[in-house]
Image (cartoon, rainbow, N blue to C red; front, side):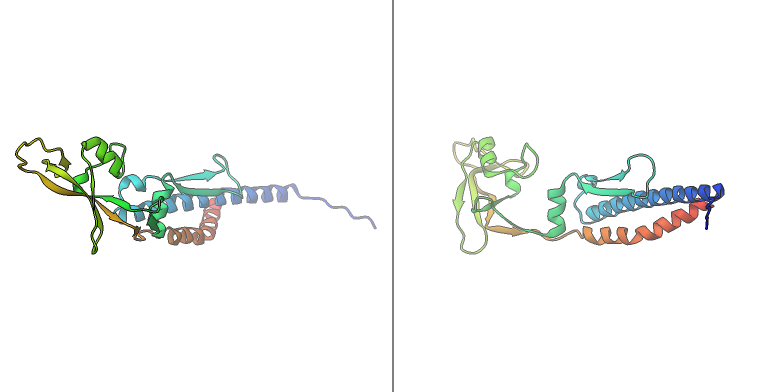
Length: 209
């Protein structure tokens, strides 16, 4: 017995067109899912009061970067993963040296390097020495003898009579801090993942019209 198989060119073309349609559908679906997840995470961050700057640290990238593929994927990440991750998990923060965590008060002012000012930087900038004050109830303190300027920050007192001189609390000292969980990024990621099959079908059907 001799068998002969002839493949209709029309069927080959139809299969190739269907594969191409699938590539377009999957690629479009992943782009929509990635863009939607980025938007959802940014909305969460701003809604939690963490600011537009941190929200804008959320980025996304589509793969392949150009063209279409059945293996298309989307990557969504933060350029500030430590900060975003901390607000997402609500960790217990301890001093890396095993001592106190120094939390700056209003009289401390801000760091010139961004973020929170440290006791060492504060002493160098202000020219004042910090003094440890232990309290049995409530956080202990680092205080300084000086005066408060118009911004409420402690500075060196130039008064010879001691007028206006105060003992100003500069830092609170605590052994650890529990950061509140303010984000739920997994929730939005799971929603984006669950939506992918429907997006693929929708884009596949749309591509046939």
